[in-house]
Amino acid sequence: MALTVSQVARLAKISIRALHHYDELGLLCPSDRSEAGYRLYSQADLQKLQQVLFFKELGFPLEDIRRILGDPTFDLRTALRMQRQLLTERAARLDALVHAVDSALDALEKGTHVDKDAMFEAFGDFDPSKYEEEAKQRWGNTEAYKESARRTARYKKEDWKRIKEEGDALFQALADLLAAGTSAASAEALDLAEAHRRYLGKWFYACPPAMHRGLGELYVADSRFMENIDKVRPGLSLFLRDAFAANAERQGAAAAPRG
Amino acid sequence: MALTVSQVARLAKISIRALHHYDELGLLCPSDRSEAGYRLYSQADLQKLQQVLFFKELGFPLEDIRRILGDPTFDLRTALRMQRQLLTERAARLDALVHAVDSALDALEKGTHVDKDAMFEAFGDFDPSKYEEEAKQRWGNTEAYKESARRTARYKKEDWKRIKEEGDALFQALADLLAAGTSAASAEALDLAEAHRRYLGKWFYACPPAMHRGLGELYVADSRFMENIDKVRPGLSLFLRDAFAANAERQGAAAAPRG
DNA sequence: GTAGGGCCTCACGTCGCGTGAGGGTCAACC
DNA sequence: GGTTGACCCTCACGCGACGTGAGGCCCTAC
Image (cartoon, rainbow over all chains, first blue to last red; front, side, top):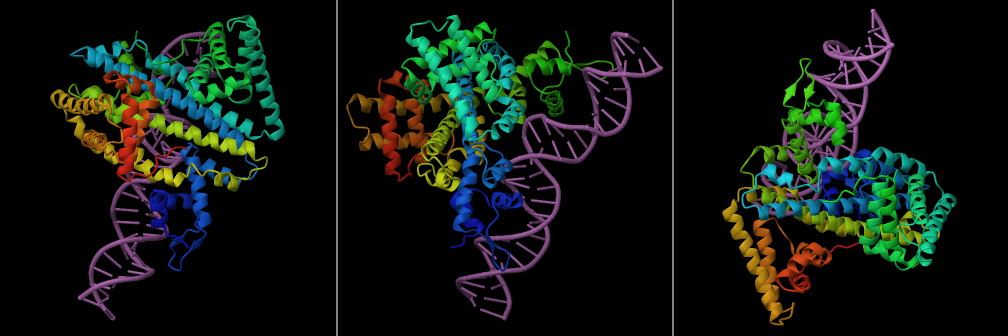
């Protein structure tokens, strides 16, 4: 049942060169070779390849994948959570970009003869440099991410449980405010929002106020977030969004970057 | 008012090396140099940098950006439309990945002690190789994209108008079917769906049936698409989704890849 | 005059492969 | 049994968008 490179490549729809590359890196070495030196992949190799491709789809670098699949003590859960966070953030960013493109197209539709300079002046609501300013903070700071990854990778089940409880407690406290009819702009709500922001920064990675505001928007924009949060108390996601935004305002954050 | 590299870098939140790089490529050469050879950026340079960063955010390669900003006859509209398409597709892919991560996390939550092998067996609905199979067709075929880019880059206003009219006519014909109460699974609807698929392939890039089905899903999932389409006739986006899906079925497409 | 920060130009490193070059292997057909 | 053509191997360089020094000039301030 051993498969050759081309067969595996066809199955997985990747290039032969990629398989060679994975072999070189020690990421996926075929478990056998023919007498002529041909790579022969077993079923187990195929399974491992699936795992490799899965993590690759998620954006992990190959070297990390090698460690993930090699180290049995790797904290998969934390890694996946962080990856999920990154993915949703990337999705939000893409969304903003699509809006920006729409604005550009609208501008083109309106002006019959639009030159590029004029077009870019119409981009009042999408100033790339302004966007970039916190985009780097928000998505690009891989150093902070790596730092956080190093930290959280050391957390074990016990730690994670504590972290989760801390987060749940914050959500519960905010839900209680909502239940009591307290405004999302009240001092208590803002303090809890700020506590939540610091909580994220403490256990995951730096979350500046503008990003926290964006997170709140995500809570209501993404139905999966919203449903999960509203399980704690109906309407909590909206309450969180408003509280996070108000707190960001209080912390003197710049306007959220949206195209 | 001339700014040095470090000042520009701070403003735009990019690296000094990046500015050097843009200079080397002829993408953004500072309009002046000090006597000592220091790069001095004018306000106009900053504006151009904004344009560069904008297109960079949209994922254009630097060489293309140089051409875009240099060639006054460049078809900006077509480029933006294609980029929009790419962005929404990337967004859909990210969405699928987030679902996949959620599945992984769910699996982890349920089994108290899940080892990696077992986890990946639980990924019945997200078979990376199966996903990859058409992912390559769907997103990865940059050669086809480039080919299409080469073609469409030559279209001028006249051509584009014709292309738009052709697309509008197809949508209108489908809207008429909807108005007449014809089923989305009817032969007429399927034929029009197929015509639309070929239309996309003809003017933009290869759109296999499974991708077309995905596009239909996008039409209802993305509110901007949906609203625009429903402007032609309320409910048209849903009708299109069903017609595209039925046509994909008829064309013998594999199930749409969703995590 | 010297310490420090900022600037310059090479020029090599990175990541995930693509893309040959140059050559051995294997099954099939003449 | 010789040849064809598909398949496989190992180098090894190329790409794109920079990162990261190295080695050295410039400029202000103490």
